[in-house]
Length: 415
Image (cartoon, rainbow, N blue to C red; front, side, top):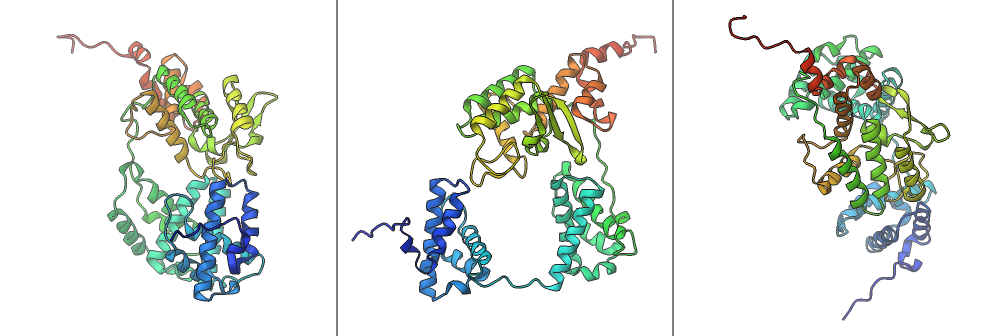
């Protein structure tokens, strides 16, 4: 006997979740979710309704524990949003309307930890001017240290000592880290220790207990692509990307190749940053610095094409959005790195570095300018470096200029 296929479009199939499940789905339809996502939400909510009937659970009794237990019993589907995520979103929808059990009040320890997190992040954001990604990394090590040392009990911060710091550093070093990133954990961890001393939560400056990791720079030449390879990569991005991402990926890579932007600066760009009438663009750089650069015609045309014909109708003011609903901005440079990696594969360009990242196009432009005779000050202004030492590395790629200042090799008997 063939089992009839469930009609998920019928509101009556949601049983005890009527009429809240259909209303919840219609709310998500306003966020421009596609048809497959809508069917997925209907299927998961129908399975939730079936489990509620079997287990005799009323809608007002739903909470996180019940939702996660039901989600674990539902068969997993390949791809798409997880069952637990969909059901927890529906639970939040019900709570906003007072239809189910409210969340339990946080404990005093959780409130204290949340207050410490907010004050620490405000300090990093307003006093130190750090990027959101760096702030997130600093709090990760701070929370991990508190959990490891004092079981996240904020009231015991004053009892922390240098021995606790050394034990934690020994613990994270034993787990192993990438050598190139060795300076990140100590630096981010040191920022938290300095903050608790700055906020008078401890009498000792424990930040002095964290050793500084020596990083030897300038040992190798900048990794870059030749100008012909850069053009091949840009053309491949425009020709071989999917219809949904073609205009977006090309515009993002063009910003990297023509203006030498950093990856986070591209994904942080907003619609208000583009001054079309005077061909200028505002760059949200490191340390909350804002710089204004001229907008070349080629880059401006690529941005205009994407905004008019490729950008989804999201509510965010960020220029570049994801292609899946709810069309939120990017949280990291992973998509940008993947776009560059895919374009290089289609173009047949071999990467000069093991890792293909957004800085590859930035280095390529700076290296090309150095080989063409641009001064280090001009390159520094384009790259927006704070320290001249950061630009000195590009002097190594100007082989013709280095030959003019090299001393003649001593001949025999002249030493």
